[in-house]
Image (cartoon, rainbow, N blue to C red):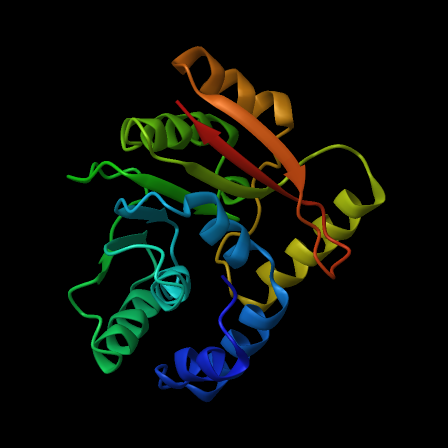
Length: 218
C-alpha cells in the first residue's frame, strides 16, 4: 500500500507553495507512519477523523492507497487548513477530504477510524487525557485508533527528540512547541479503562527520534 514515486510527486504538486511541495515529497518518501496507518485500517472502509491534521496530507495519501472514502481533518492552524483545502480542490477531492479549522476537541458528527499523529506532546498533560477520551468517543465499534507520538522513556532517542522539538519551536513550524511528552503508561491509563485494547511498537524509520506507533481497538 505504498504509492509509487509518481503518485508522491502528484500529491505534492497539488500544493501551491514550493516549500510545501519539497517537504511533502520528502515526508511521503521517508516517514513510515503513512504506510503504517494505511495498513492499520486496511479492509475497514470507515470515515477517518484526523486530529491535528496540518495540511491534510494523510487524507491525500490514504485516498491514493484507495484505503478510505471519507476523511475529516481538524486543526487550529488556519494557514495550513486553507492550503490543504486548496490542494484538495486541485485534486478533485473537495468532497472526500474535509478540513476544518477548529480546536482539536470540538465534537464532530462522525464515528470511524481516528488518527492522531505527533499531536499529544504539543498539549499540556491535562489536555492530553481530554483529547484521548475525545478520540475514543469518535471511534466506531470496528474502528482503529492510530496514535504516533514521542514516548518519554529516558533513552538517547528521547533526548534527541527533545532537541529536535526545540528547533521546531524556534523556526515557528509548531507555535508554542512541545508541552509534555507522555509515557506509555500515561496513554494506557486513559484508554484501557474505556475498554480499548492497546498495542505499541517502535516506528523510528530512518530517524534518530523516539517515535512510537500505537494502534487501539475496542
